Length: 199
Image (cartoon, rainbow, N blue to C red; front, side, top):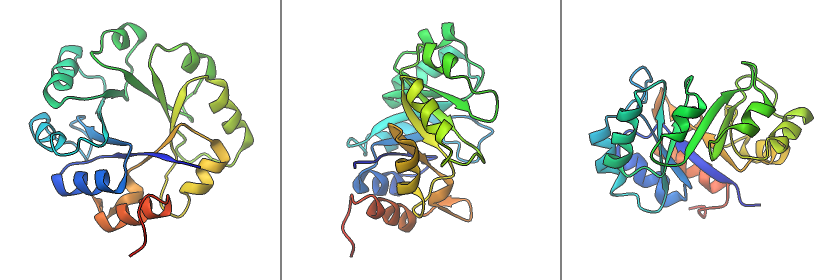
């Protein structure tokens, strides 16, 4: 089974090119200044020009709407991921399709996720056990394309996918060494998915 993957927290050209060449379906830039993976829109725009093979996601948290739409235009984003308290009216006004993030351990509601005008949702399981059957059922019941974040790494990605059957998985810290993206781990991750051959 094909497993779609989003590599989040890209901050430099070499890492972005590695992810794209390995077959990343989505590459995500974090524009939340409080996040350790923050990248400036100017830098992201330069990187974006070199990775035409992956869809580009911009991650924001409670940002001014005009700022978000300016970055969409400057970087050429395909999606905006909203990680804060943005409401439905805000989502309607974003200049490209939206991925709305929900945390499972913070009152996640299937009904709310189902009703959102966002095109997709990102469900962050936190420390929840992804093998619990009710999680898989809730993912199905949202009737949305669900990107799953669940401390995913090379060793467990296939098990996570088999247990929950999301539209895609999001991976970030599972590709890091000492808090930085590790291109060797990126290659090993996508080799595990069968995208690239060993060697």
